[in-house]
Length: 224
Image (cartoon, rainbow, N blue to C red; front, side, top):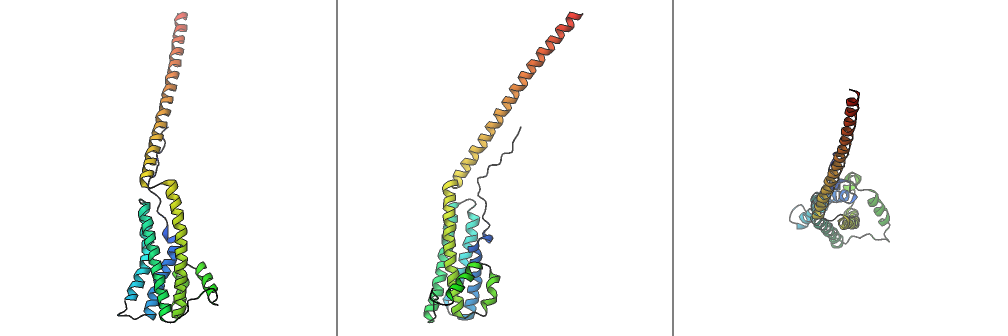
């Protein structure tokens, strides 16, 4: 008769490590560390710290947003926005490097543009890019990084729209807690109603048995 009550008000934590845009941010972080080591001064250039910090902030805020999203849709949205802002800042640093060093930003007319786009679309993880880290020129690595930054931003926009729809349909934690409580009460009400029906059924059966017992006694008394 008793049924298990299982209403959840906490959202399931997203498996951020499986998100393609997160995997690309990890690649961007490692790529940026290598880029700074190879092409920027080891000391006296604040750009190094800024680029590495922006790359790290991009991936870390996705992780923190995923964790905080269990209880707070608002906090998740804020942290994802911070992640996007960090990636945009990183992209601007790479663009500044290309401009200041008189290097080309590859566009649709550049022969390497389309192959780079296809490669970055198909590959997310660090190990896919590591063989090139010490072979690419600064122009090649910077363009690859810019491409990844653009892709991450686009993918995160799509992800955030999905999260907005979830919030509209499921609400925040207060709405989910209320729904869980109402669901609990509904289940308790159904259990009580089922118990009352069973009790009434048993009472009816008891009356039938008492009637049968009275009849049998009357029959026995007649035979004496």
